[in-house]
Length: 374
Image 1 (tube, rainbow, N blue to C red):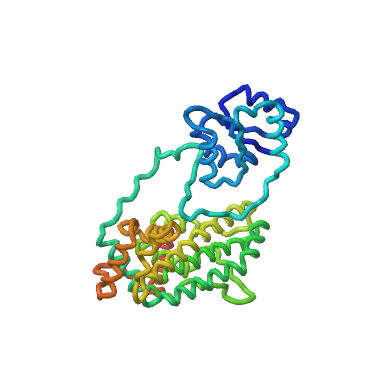
Image 2: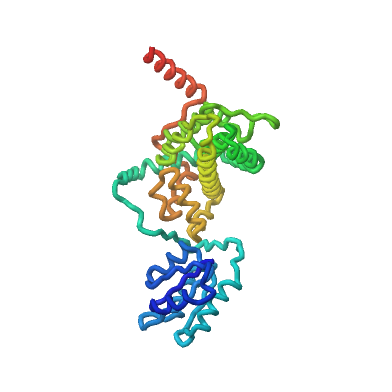
């Protein structure tokens, strides 16, 4: 088992390690208060013992700093007047007598942060794309509202069907991945069902020709070797409209994964499943935001600032659609929704082509490439 020992006395640590019960246990020493939280999070100890005490900070203050974060591990405070061998043995007995029990996650919706061993490297990072003009962002949002007024109910039903598909089929797809069966690439088909949900809101989109939110038959599925035309159509529409550029590039990359019976397949399938999870959350956040925006009285929008979870839904929505001007407050969104309800529409926005035109364009490109090779 693992013991995190916070102390400022090397002799005390040495004595602790010499006790009979010390064998077969791992001790993680910590002498700096600034390192305690990160070390406790990184090592996941079974017990934290606080044996350090000085004028700068008390043991109770150190204990409180761990408890306020909500660490699941047990914490033992060891005052200076109880540091004889008998009390050192009691530490090891305490560690051994209280094994760790699995707990249900208790997520603090208002306070959540991520620590790491060191700050993430920033050298060599690509320069960030500057935000678009406010008028472009406003037009994009107005376009989403106008198309959502037509297709929102259909998109909701589509997403519900897609989520049900994953719930019913993910056991089969996971087994395929573990068996290095190419059928694991059906995770990619699922991923593009969530892309299809978001594509419902692109002006001019042909919703009848987006990917089916479920397999084509109750007893039959189909695995395309490359992205199906319907999936390409949805992705192309999102990229052209202005969806998150980094995600659009990533979706294009996973769309190019070659379908094959390959021993490395489980890794690729896990990647696709992870993408599907991220796009599912994006689609759900989008639906929640459009529910509020398209309501007859959109007064629910300001409530999105009330707690961290709701703020994150708004931020996911804005990040996906490149609406950086609306990240800080739902009040700006509400103002534009009010203008939309009063008759304002996008002044200059690109509409998607029909599925027929998209297929014609692809066929023309393929023909031109074939002539160039010959």
